[in-house]
Length: 195
Image 1 (tube, rainbow, N blue to C red):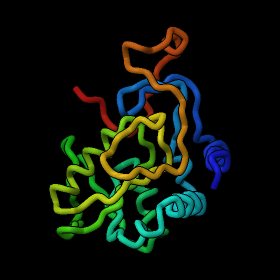
Image 2: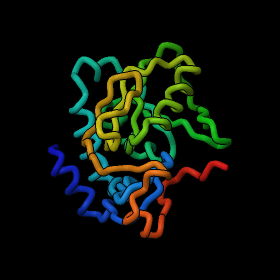
Image 3: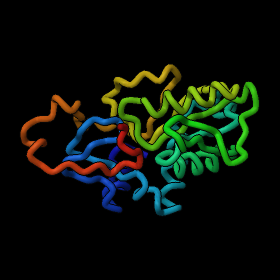
Image 4: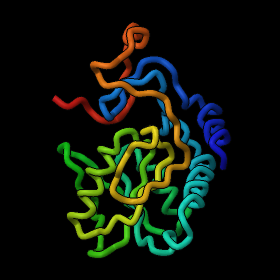
């Protein structure tokens, strides 16, 4: 699947938004990818996951024991990636602000884990989820994501395989350009504001 074909999937369901958005990373952008919307159609989600699976090197695919995603954003694409790879897919969540494994899920010590995200901007959620998996004895072999918004700068400490890399600029609070600051801000992500 080419970058244009991936973006066409987002555009076809109005999942590529324009305005002023505060991302879950805390950064601001004039563009937002509503991955939940692009993944709401099971056939589309399956196509995207298969394309992501094909981006992984063949030898890596054979090593994966388990797919783990951070909830909420990575949950659907992680499940579909598990289906594409023929592996179980579970998720970690933050009921109290720190990622935990709940719902009777287990990670066997030494399990080779593929972390799967929807969008990576700074990589903070990914790194926090990986810390949780490692604390439980899992070994992260790589991360896959639908979208890399980091402009190629993210360092997750493991090989990273995004389906598409988008270089929409993002800005720290103090760097927001005047034209973007003039637009009312929306916070569409699932993560609550930190106090």
